[in-house]
Every structure is written in C-alpha cells, then in structure tokens.
Length: 182
Image (tube, rainbow, N blue to C red):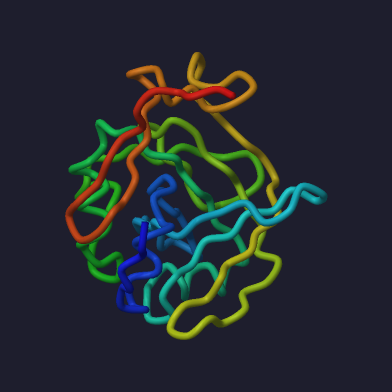
C-alpha cells in the first residue's frame, strides 16, 4: 500500500488522539481552566508529565507565576464543559462558574482540581522549554487522584463511566472503543 503525503501542519492530527484534559492553574486569587489535547508522560523516575500550552494563553502566565498546575482527566460526558473551557477566556471569566465545574482542593498545590473529572495529577513545574508558539510545561508529579472504580492497574476506559475524550480535529472528538490484548 502506498502512502499519500499530508501537509506538515497536520502531523499532530495523525498522532494526537490521546486524552483531552483540563489543565487548572492558579496565581494569587485568579484560577483558570484550559482545555489541552497535547499532554503526555515524560519520566518514570521521578514521575513527570508535560502539557503543551500556547505562550499567549492565560494559563501559561498563571503556571509560570505559580510554578504549579494540575492535569484533570475528562470523562466523555463532560463534552460541553470541556468546550466551554476551551472557547472562553479565563482572563475575563470564572470558568468554574461559567462552565459548571466544581473546584476541589488538592493536597500539594493551590491550583484547584475538578470534581467532575475521572482523575487529576498535581504537578510542580520543573521546566518549560519553548517549542515554536508553545511551551512544554514539564511537571513533577506530586499526587495522583482517581474516582473509585475507574482505575486499578490502569484507567478502565472500556467502562462506560470511565470513557475519556480524544481530540481528532476542530470539533471532532472520539471515545475509546474495545480493549485489544495480545
């Protein structure tokens, strides 16, 4: 089978169907939520994760000022709330109120976790290298949380109450299908 060449600007759409997440941040009295599709683990020891955030985003500013953030794993039932967080500005809106989400106090950071999500990862910012028009916010994992019944040795995405959202392009998302074992 031959390949068809795609525009280089679409490379992310070929590989980026990991879970869409909500990144929370807070500096002083201002908290924010942003939608992010570019998120990944980066290290086992110490445990680290990263999220790519546009340098002009309000969350970028809050994370650099506070040196912390949380990654909240969405349930597929939160599609409208996720869209609200990704299309409204946190500079002028309280996204928790506007998007109908509940802030939850974490253990190690001031940035709130999101009560409706499947789980959350509290992070301390370790580095933020620039990659074009984004920064890769690399965080050391301080605490990990999951709703009861959705995680044992892995996230149980095959369960209806644990299905994640995955961004494909624009307004197109998908949820996990069946689990395949080898």
